[in-house]
Image (cartoon, helix red, strand yellow):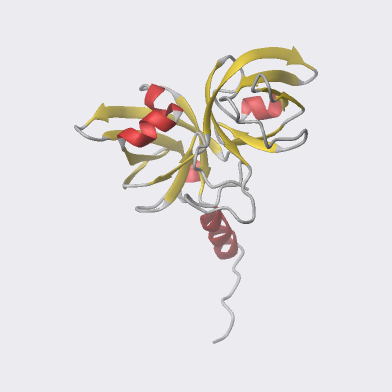
Length: 207
């Protein structure tokens, strides 16, 4: 489980072909891996991955990602910058929102502009995720916990708007996005359960 509060900026420095997927080597910030062990979970651009080997002195770790995960995520198949978040511990603050690290779908940046003091980011989401997005609701974009400011329904899904402050741009990879970029989306965990209960016709308990 994660919170969507990015704890480090990393970089995929190597992506080697492996059986049914790829083996990635990730460079993390100095000291980032001091409390990490083999088998720990780290979210990479919002996708929960398992550390298979790490070198704390060099601040590098490796992970294996399957072909299916590569097909269902963006930005994890080649070298480049990534957002990192280590798994939530029981005594940690929940500074963002509950994030599982399971990417629900791929969105595409449709607008990204400086409005003077803050930036507006608009993303088009596929039809299957549109029903989970609501004004003032939560969304994780490339693992970053954000608040939806506006939603516009479209024939093939929806377009939602996010306001980004300079701190978020400096502490995550979102500042490197451009129109047309593909991003990982994870909808609010609670919204998923509500949708399931409603679609299954579960009645509310009496009283």
